[in-house]
Length: 252
Image (cartoon, helix red, strand yellow):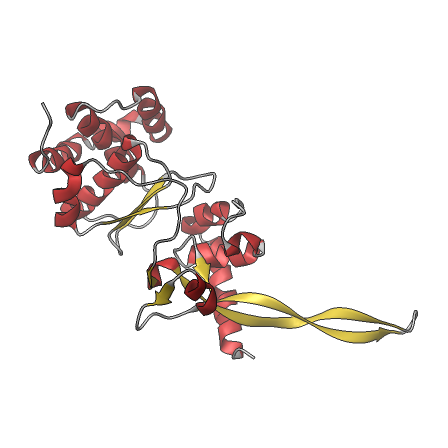
């Protein structure tokens, strides 16, 4: 039996879903691809997984079967499994099962494992011109399954870019977040100024380097936040774009 404090820990994590900053993660938990073990978990357990900042979590033996092992010092988080007990129905004099409580099941995030690669939906193919800036910023680039809501993300704490699309504009958006983080420091949440800066910076970088960026999508994205916000971020955007271009080999 898992200690009761782990059950409380899992329940406390669930309560965090009511924080506005976590509503996006709650939305992600709705979508299942039917490919990895967590796709078979309950909705609440998938919320727990996303609130622990991962899109793939498994038990120790499940990771071992994939040829991956838990990194030293990594800690499990706990999902909840129902426990049932048999009782006798006084009316029918038959056995039936009733919910008696929950027990915690320890699982580990993909990010806390190492070993054999896990097969993704597609191959990350970042143009080599960005190798230097990726190294300078200490970034880790991971492919993740599209969850129906988000094509990419940048985690300032882990210096990690996750891509659910091979499209260059998605990478450039998240790379711009990383550069903006280096230059100005990002604040938690999906803030208007940060999103407008990343979207417009990525579009300008793509244009300068000769990549085809769908400007209609860029316009629609920025309109969602407001062009007034864009005008207030132009100086910041110029610094982000210059940082990337100055460190990137532009092909003739």
